[in-house]
Image (cartoon, rainbow, N blue to C red; front, side, top):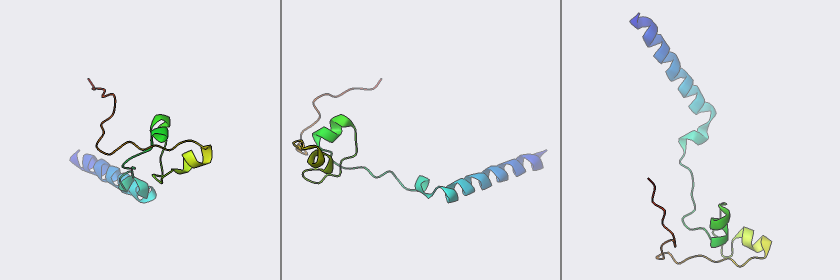
Length: 79
């Protein structure tokens, strides 16, 4: 009975190895922008952090970045 249990775990390990091989993106951490402009922050979209950013440039909007030492206006605590 223990032989069947070990076979199952070996198979599960093989499946995980195959999934990792087929999806290399899983192995890399998500790349995040350190600071997004206010427009991209409100829209919750990826900001390219150019000054002005690509979205604001193409939309004709004023691209504003908050100072690095200024905290967010609203802090929401999670329960």
